Image (tube, rainbow, N blue to C red; front, side, top):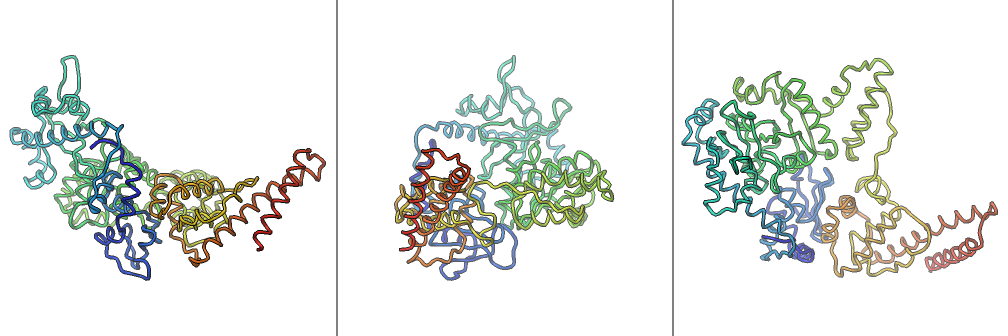
Amino acid sequence: MAGRIPEDFIETLIERVDIVEVISSRVQLKRAGREYKALCPFHNENSPSFTVSPDKQFYHCFGCGAHGTAVGFLMEYDGLEFPAAIEELASMAGLEVPRQAGAPQAERNDGLYSALSAAADWFVRQLASSREAGQYLSGRGLDDKVIEEFGIGYAPEAWDSLHKYLTGQGIKPDAVEAAGLVARGERGVYDKFRHRVMFPIHDRRGRVIGFGGRALSDRGPKYLNSPETPVFHKGKELYRLHQVRKARDRADHLLVVEGYMDTVALFQNGFPNAVATLGTSVTADHVELMFRTVSDVVFCFDGDEAGERAAWRGLEAALPVLRAGRQIRFLFLPEGQDPDDVVRAEGPAGFQRRLGDTRTLSEFFFEHLGTGLNLESVDGRARLVALSEPLLRKLPKGPFSDLMGQELERRTGYTSTSPQSDVSGARPKAGPDKGRLTRVQYAIAMIVQEPELARQIDTTVLDVPGELKGVDFLRQLIDFCIGKPHLSTAVLLEHWRERPEGPWMARLAARDLAIDADSAREILQHELNRIGVQMLESGIHSLQEKQATGSLGRDEEKSLGQWLALRASIRESMDK
């Protein structure tokens, strides 16, 4: 399936599907007036704060901030990539997804997926022929059921047997090489994995995208992962996440470990919710993937210095995506032992007891930064503030960020005044139900909730001289809505989903503006007129200051007169 999905098809699809139908097939919704409510599927809560609006065709959780259209919900809840979510919705609507020409990469990727899938099947068949591989797996306590569950196989020691098999099946040699299954040397093409126990790695759609190979000899590295390919990116994938997400009884937390055998051992001992990183540090993409599955993540690392460093890198990666309802904990094991060692030595009950003794992110954060500091001294407390503040600024605004700042104040006695940076010039300083919006923000919120208003107002008032924060984005939004007749809130939000303003616009869409539909146009026009006056006044004030000092030029004096007249004209129209 090649090519890019046309934007007009995406808009048509969003208008065709019913978001209530999409979400109710996965979450139990109850009608609440014109909307529907439910317990949020993305964080734990006791009272429903998850709202679905059939009028606006979008959802919003007032607890954790999750929001989006039907496309976004499938991406978040089912863990699908954008094209897969479009395919799923199109199937529900009985539509065929068209593709635009000019993106041959998708065709090339189809060949890679075929090569990887065929290789996984071939590795499984080879396992029975290796006595050494069988002995290794039985020595680790793996039975046939677990081996089948994980799709474990064996790569023979032969030079190019996999390459010969795949090309003999009609798979193009270029695809085999691009999939990372073979390499080229002085003797020609050879299999990258040889004499290794093989663990297939799947993406969120269940397709094989790479492998991890455990050596059965002392030659080469103990573990060898597939290289980066067009379909495999270690920093964006987690071993066994697909299987955990598809489990009938999905766990309420994830165990994040570092090795394939750790996940196997934990699964065999009653912990099927373990996933593993793929030979790389935890990234923000990893953490976001985890939170799309659960709201509680436990990092499980060795208790030595290397384990603490790995845990700290995971903490740093998590800070930008932490928000209310998301929790990260840390389980540090005895030095020199990994989860495989501990669960086999102590059994499921012993490992479960350790899970009851985890450290919270806040505890680990301040304990790690405070190591070696004398917090009884001013110097030590000042150092803790200096180390903490740059990291705390990475946290999204919200209760957790506020509480972490309060904890720093409790430990040091210092009250931080450093502002957190805004993502967009028009972003409000409060959540969807807190704080007052500026006049520009209010106008944007009205248009987001009712895009048709943009076609009913006089926007020339925004062309006056002067500057005001957020007006450039307001103009851009109005122009977009005018160019899209009968635009819905859902289509508007989907258009801006990947842009910096997208999350903020979704929060504005959920905000209760308490406006009567019959008077919406007049209210918005009044707000635009006031914005125009504000812009003019900023320019007028600047020129009047120059006039008072006698430095006003002739052209500037002419402009001042015109601007004063224009301001009076706008005010007169507002009074009518």
